[in-house]
Image (cartoon, rainbow, N blue to C red; front, side):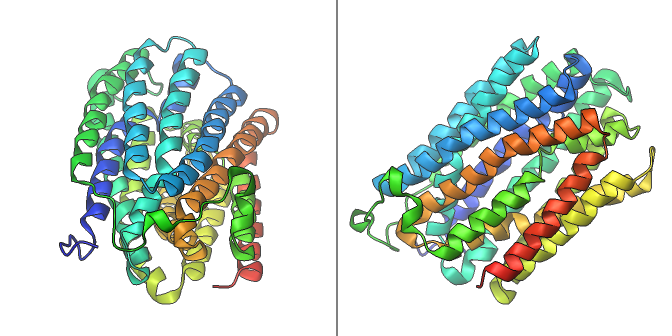
Length: 401
């Protein structure tokens, strides 16, 4: 690895974090309230919202498996990562044309395809740039920079919403289009940072990689990794799109501005805890930190199910603790994937991990949308809390570090 260091790490970690920062400034202006745009402006049923969020993520996730495998085969992470970010940046302006939920779905799908292409090679590139002893810290810093971008994006969105419509309860078409116009700028800026990224050369000779065929991807990993993917599937089945959190906050009597402020609080807590949690996982082990995060998640979802209408401070507290969950588990889970996979299979491992998460989001979001519409708005969160508790048992009992 190169001798220069930023935060004591390979510069790739910082610059990939900066790319994620700019991209999240853009995305968090447009997509956290995408569900409100569908619901308030396009009058889309919640079951269709679940279908849009779940299908776009799931179909695109198949690309994560392929792109991760391809980055191992080619020994090139950077080009695939750039392609994914570029596709998402190019898709966002078309949201200005979204007058029906079908068009909105098409734009959302293209954005998710871009994420599907970039995510596994990017995470593998971060892991390639770190030693084992730095892995938790490095992923924590990357997650923190990513989430600071989310904070800036949501702050920008709040300013635009207040300027355009004050404290109105429902989102308007004009306000959302203004958010899209401004959000395009940081997405383009992120692409220029790629000039500073370099493929790591020192750790392993890429030419020596023995790449598994696509039809034998799982056979190249040990039992622990396969069980971990099963546990992740179970957890994700109850972890529907975060779009339902925004809908739940509005359902409990909060305006668009208040929903954005809650998302801001969530992302601020997430960003603040990501790096300390990553460092802690380097010292105490990944499982303990992940289990702590999943426990917080289960309690938050239980709280979102039980909180009374216009619950006031309780809702704000739950969104803050949702940031605690992400801070503890977000980067640590990614570091754990690198722990469980051999270096020559790292891109494939991240592809499989993100693929399982993304594909499972389709049934998860459909289940959440159905429970919301056919039972009540609290039901999806009770289901999510139950799946989280079961996943904790699976991780604790079945996987050893």
